[in-house]
Length: 435
Image (cartoon, rainbow, N blue to C red; front, side, top):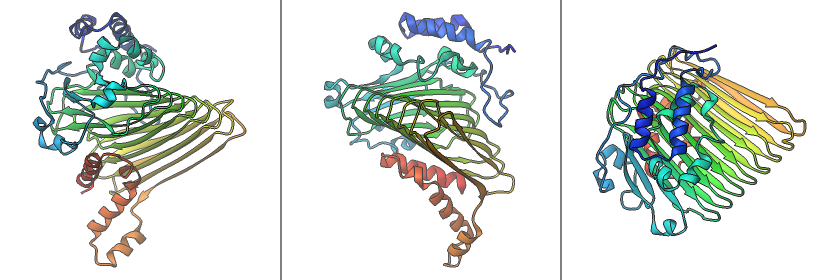
């Protein structure tokens, strides 16, 4: 079946935007190819969520230009609260669609570490970017949303760690949204070469209560042989966006990718977090928490695919639903044929705080190999009355008791975030959303 979609931009608009950023020919060609595909490809089909009537294509403006920052002190207060202004050595800030500020320590720069915006990476590190950009982890032709992303990409970051380099201080990336008409087609690539290590922390922060744009965001993370990547993120995008957020990882031999994701958007969102354990002995932990409120509709898929032998994957999803919000949590562990002695474990738990809230934990194990271990746990329910009784019997009000239970329920991910300002932000967002 062919899906007809009228796109907001023309093919000429896409070519013109590429030229304005002085992109290499390969990237311009990939954009044009993606634009043609976007007109015919179907939308993805997330399990148990109908998105055919969601608006993924209309937006008022493709790119909003802002002034660059001369220092982090110029950021709005809510953004400054996420950053150690004096102590943060490695940081990139994008304001709406403008690369606004970047700082990388001299030590890391001398070791060959790269931290820059996606457009500078395309111009100055073209061959390196081409190797990883939508060629392995995420493909342009997967469905309509990946094609739209490649065609309309208007921001993002590139982080590269050479072989054997250990980045001891976290690299922080802040995507700041403070204009209602902005759309975010951000692409992030994180590469850790053999035997290197990196902690990457990402924030999406809306300072407007409403948005008229689209958020179509893709991150590709590569942990090559013996490398370790810790990827922390907190998403706080405002209502009005229609969001597709896809974070995907690929591991080499004996490599490791750790995910700690705080999914706190106020808009309808499709989340994907997929890790391909390709190298023997590699492993991944995917931990995510979500709070839904109002009439939000969300679909969250965490998936770990075992290709290599002796691979280990663990998925933890905790969600809290209130008011009339609804969310589907899909936890998928897939063990391919030949991935002997692999281990796939998952846990999905949903806590509902109101009669009209809906949550569905959907555990899936797909196993094509005999010599493996696998298991799953899932639960959907309301606050345990025995826990409430225990707390209230000690003089705590019911509202305060529920608040404490929710924070404890979500703590496994909050505690994993490596930057104190970001950890505090996630706790405060949770507090605000469940209040």
